[in-house]
Image (cartoon, rainbow, N blue to C red):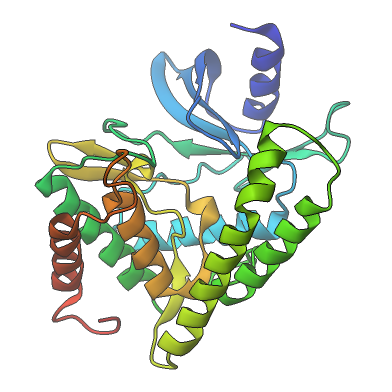
Length: 293
């Protein structure tokens, strides 16, 4: 084990009552946060956990937001999310400063979810039973969180405010005087990006109504953020993207992630048969109950 990483992980474990670190493995799939599967030994028993080092820009209010959502889901028997492990002081996260990060970095430790990482966020080819189960998970997630007020707050604006901000960021990037293959491609495609943003915003302005439900959404629901076993979704993670927004946005984003084609010829085409199966399963899960429909 790398001594620097081992020292870092041990410094975090010192805030917990989880025993001694005996093994770790970095999660190479993450692109925003840095995470590790770890194993500790306590009283002769070996146990596995998931340790996350959050991106440097995250703030305590966002962690409280995420962790209170997890606690609410767990309290309603939504067991496929990983519970947050409390520190010795009863907190849900640890703040650690270092020479590299003088302002400090936040860490949290979670239960380790069972199941198999079968997919990433692209080129997913879920089976019918996995599609049905995933839709049931999303519907149940929405149903439990409908009307819930979490602690803290999420820094990212809602989608109607976020789209104009993205266009502004595109303009800022276009002002960067840098010549390389990426910037050449970006300048070439920037008009397309901006036009798509405008079309999307116009469609949302005309299509959304006061009746559209707003609630805590996952905001990154795709096969790569689910674990599967025996054709069922048995684990859901990456709730640090969650925020208060339109339920419609969460469902639409899930449909895109799950069912858009990535192959060259049908690139961008939606697999409508699978999409229908997902939506029917989602609606069936919500039918007959109180609250969200």
